[in-house]
Length: 104
DNA sequence: CCGTTGACCAGGC
DNA sequence: GGCCTGGCCAACG
Image (tube, rainbow, N blue to C red; front, side):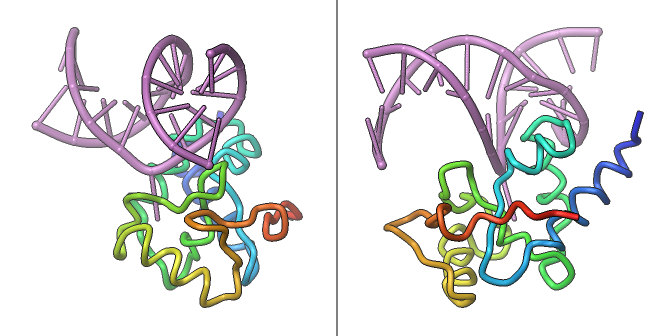
């Protein structure tokens, strides 16, 4: 059994792999690590380190941005993503063209 | 110890 | 797509 510390670093490691202009979802990460999606959110929330881990590239399963993004809310997260060239349809990311799944 | 909460998700309407 | 419901499970008070 992996310790929660291993889980934590595994999540952050995966997030760090998401390239510029691409995104992934909480659920996708959760399935990869065989854990509950809520744990993903917990890890990202308790480890706000935007400089090292691009947590703004993690969105909801439907492409919606995180409501409680620590840096300034979903609006700020959208701004950061748009800044990387991510295309939106209204309030949600176009997952069809930006979803990243080629993890190591 | 226990009820509540929450950076979620899938299914049904 | 939107709204509700139930399930999930660790963290918090």
